[in-house]
View 1: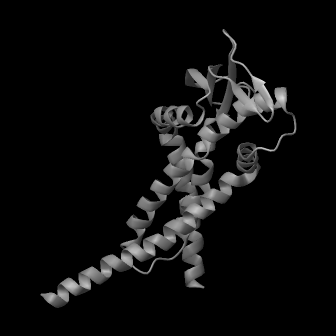
View 2 (view 1 turned 180 degrees about the vertical axis):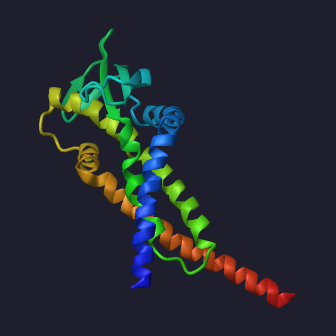
View 3 (view 1 turned 180 degrees about the horizontal axis):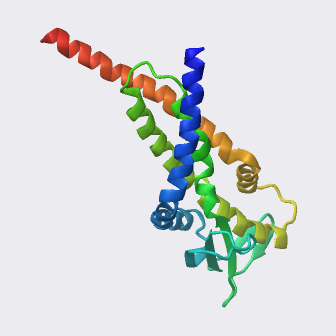
Length: 212
C-alpha cells in the first residue's frame, strides 16, 4: 500500500513539474531548439532551400497557435514515383508544426520516470539526465521529419496521390499519438539504463572501499 501511495504521489508531482517546466521554460527552449530544427531539416530535405524558419503565432493550418513556420523554395528536380517535378523559379511553399509538439513526450515521460521506484538514490539524477538526453534526441526524429513530411505531401498529392511513403507513415504515426508512445518508451529506457548505470557506480564504490 505504501509503495503504491508513493508511486502515485511521485506521478502527480511529475505531472505538475512537467506542466511547470513547459510554462516556465517552454518559450526559451523553443527558441534554443530552432537552430537544431533547421540543421536537422536541411540535412533531411536536400531538394529544397530553406527561405525562413521561425517561431510564429500564425500557422499555415493551425490558426493562431505558436508554430515553427517553414518557407522553402524548390531547388532540385524531384522524383515522385515515376513522375518528375522540375524546380520552378520563384516557386515556394509554406508549412508549419506546433511548438507544443516539443512537449508531448515530456508530459508523459517525466511523471512515469519519477513514479517508478529506485533502488538507490543515485538512480534519480542518472535517470533524469538520461531522460533529458533521450527526449532531446526524440525531437530530432519528430519535428524535422514532420515538416519534411508536409513538404513531401505537397509533391505526392500533386504527382502521385495515394503513393506509399515510409516518411508519411512515420508522420501519421506521430500525429496519431505516437509522441506519447515515444514518451513512454523514453521513460522506460531511462529507468532501465538508470538502474544499470547506478549498479555499475555502486559496484565500483564497493570495490574501491574493499581495496582501501
